[in-house]
Length: 182
Image (cartoon, rainbow, N blue to C red; front, side, top):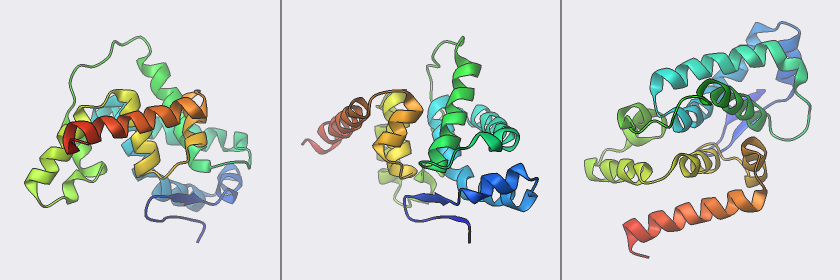
């Protein structure tokens, strides 16, 4: 097995990029199947719209296919993939103003809300997610959904590790204070 997912961590064998560069369609399929769920959740946290997230997902994999030779064997391949997705998002949406609404039904299945049987718990999690700003959602999705390390998130966001860690902790405290009265 070259790639796979554990509970909160995506493992991608770096050799897949060399195989993709050589035209190996099975390696590309394996990379896609291993990484598309956390990448889609990340893109959805940015776009807040399933159609835009799907478009960016497709564009990201096109870039990966075309630029697999640029991957350098260091660090986390998932971080490299997410950085491509984020750069495409920034290029596409730089001139658009911030969207004012969130379609929670779009986020529901990819962020795990669909698997929650208790409707009250489901609604609470959706409400909690809506109370976070885009950057807070982005950090939480990358860390808690994709299992990325804070240094990898900092690299994607072009921010110092301390800033990312502080914003993550502040977001978690914000949720605890608002919903757990801590």
